[in-house]
Length: 58
Image 1: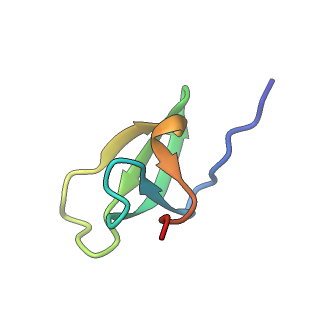
Image 2: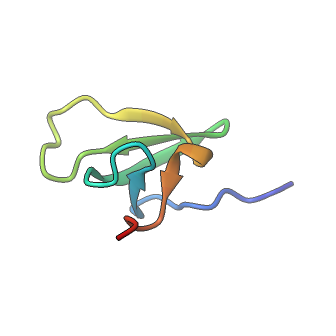
């Protein structure tokens, strides 16, 4: 079984808007639940691994 790429607490970015910084809160059944570090009251995002990147592209 393949391990997931990102761990709890990792900083990630979405491929569609690389300016948005996210923190992985948890990983359940191939879905990453991510929070906005600058606004923890904002609703978290549920994203697949293919929608995330490690760091923004220049």
